[in-house]
Image 1 (tube, protein in one colour):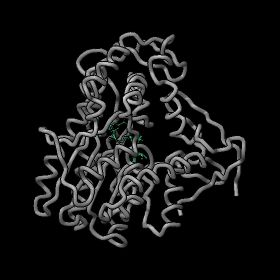
Image 2: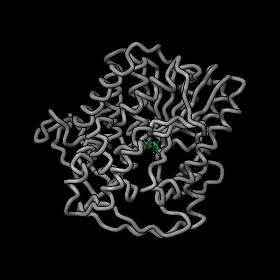
Image 3: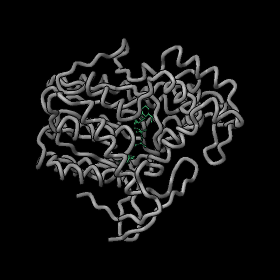
Length: 397
Ligand code: NAD
């Protein structure tokens, strides 16, 4: 037993501490949404989630495991807890997911390591072969700052920069809570290429190739990777920036993968999800401010969805067992339909034009944004006594 009082130590868009019990409560709340939202659906077969510990990947793992009764294997890159050191939020999320799965007799395993490496792919293949059998669904939900190319050893970096012209626009500084101008120089060709190597479709394709070669894809296999499009307001930094070009590559990869899966009658999809507060999205300039404005508008209209609600909708209406996807003309699954409704975007754009440090909390839901952000690390969760010592070493059972 190693009990201690855990306090937030937030540094800009990251908290260097995470509260184990707060993270556990977040997971339990998501599990409830998944169970209710997916009740009555057929059971899902063996499922692999790459990027399984936080954000959209965690919501996918919880939905598949607890909502659709699937045996699930997750892959993530987290700092595990020890007697001496706190684990990361993702670690504590999975510690609770494993505990619940064991208590309910479900099959959940985690491989914690670099998903880009050959070693982790081999470890996953061995685990699937020994304990799962061919998978029905692979969800690819990585958001990573770098990737070491296993063949050449080259290290690629993902950057969040505009392409073709410098970026000057509003952003909210998460350290000072001030609305200020962000200025970011246009990316170099090397940075554009590096981001594509990290966040494009290469590694997704490599996972599918290795699993197919190992005979571990079930007939009718489906794979889904997550993408984002977003509004005109953020397009200079997002969709037309380095990350957007990488997402275009990811989207093109889906077509190539579908062709390679024809013998299995398999299909690769990209799901364009809505903007939500995650560790990855908090790092993107201007997006924090946009999401704060969006939250206010969508909550007022009653159309707000969080990460788990989006994934429950994805499984229930698009890629869950027995469901036929309804892609748009470009072949993309669109879960960002409510975010991009013209009246929602018009209201956000109108507020964007006049938002300042002085009116930030009045015309946006910056308080809600900050609360969501702190909750990612287990802080500000209802029912948790933050003055009480809590067990910090939580192994994955
Ligand atoms: P996140 O930061 O919450 O999750 C990233 C996951 O990747 C974590 O589980 C982390 O452990 C894992 N990971 C990172 N590097 C790894 C590595 N080398 N090996 C193994 N695991 C590794 O991010 P998120 O926002 O949930 O993003 C997931 C996907 O969803 C991304 O493709 C993102 O572009 C997409 N998306 C996000 C949003 C949003 O608003 N957050 C919107 C639409 C789409």
